[in-house]
Image (cartoon, rainbow, N blue to C red; front, side, top):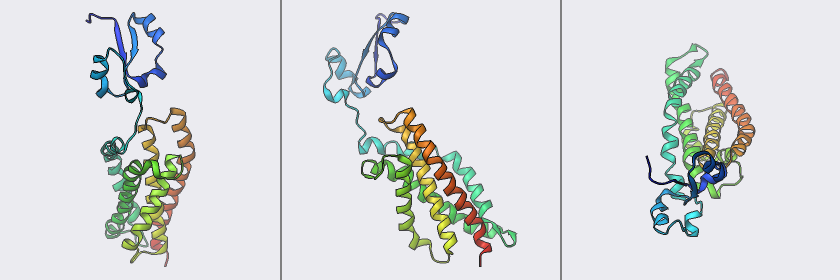
Length: 223
């Protein structure tokens, strides 16, 4: 039970809330407060008079960086299945299936996955304003290509050209997908924008993953 008939809503609730309808339906008056809860005490002290900073939406480096651990945490469960897939795919060879190859080549594929995670879930949020392209999935392609190119001298020894291309495609696909996934964490994207991103990005990502998987599986058969 409360002794007042007033609701204070976040500023960003305004696009989805009609104050008049809330008042008619509940009897509570509606006031839109500051964007951030951190500013609420000062806003209340001023009797609901906020300054421009209280109504400004920001997405600074620190605000983007704090989301990175969340993105990484959400990857824990999918990574379990990915480890199994990497081992199975990497063990395929002339002898049907080789446990030794599964471990050795699987480690390389998981390494490419880690590079993709670094590029898409870490670098894209940190470098967001400076990366070319507006679409997030494309930003992930750029960071994925950059990371793959930088890592190539470290892993190229002993790998065929087919295997190198497969690993690069895999890393780029992972990076692009995770960058696209970050779209929903930003304060300036809409549902229609996310859907448009997915319609354009998913086909490219699926094509890259499919090509990488095929190339990685057939590489042991190519002399």
